[in-house]
Image 1 (cartoon, rainbow, N blue to C red):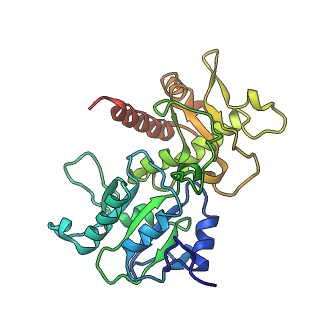
Image 2: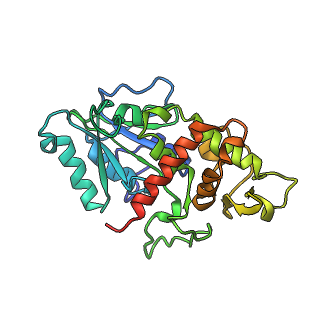
Image 3: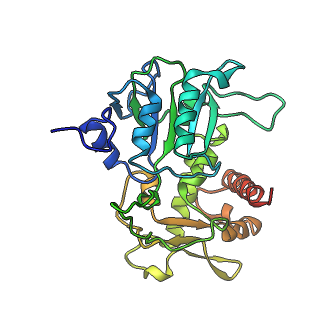
Length: 300
């Protein structure tokens, strides 16, 4: 079959299949040949020579998720103090500027950050997971590694030839709601929570407490919780939500968003710690996340 128009020739059939099967919230990492990929993680070999070219080719086909830190793509930062002169970084920056994407940087390894606000999570700890889809390139440049999370399909720009339908998910005030991937992105910045149990328990217990996905409770009554005698929405259910059981929490929460105003009220009323498997650690995580969102919403 001849090469498909508009598709990077470095993306073979296996790569295209992997991208097609990746859903919203899937983390993708583009790495150079020397990168130590976890043994249990899925790996696809990119047939081109440049990691920056791979990034351009992949992001021409899938959208990115703007997470809590508002970056589309995270790059591995070179160890040298002159890291901005790194050849791989410059190549990535050229692509992201061309595609009008916002980029962030992470050092290779986590930094205890003595005297600072807390430890900084490095690229390896941020990315290395059996859930990450790795694209291994043949790029010989040092630090030729980048990562992003797949966004909603409707986030792709429409063109006259390929119109994109309007999103079915109800509109929501971005400062009032948060989805699982946003909260996970924030969690990954704090080593204390990197095992993911706190966030998983928070979502799973609130879903169970409010009957989300139950066949016995009408959909319009799901996602509501009693806070000091007031029935409030804690989880909003979008039209694209499916109650079909999935093994990973990131998939179970697709189509759901958490009401941060109600979460704040539960925190203030000390209601979170009363829910099974939640406690002071869940409260601590929620408090830090809400504080970060409030700081972010303040005018600059």
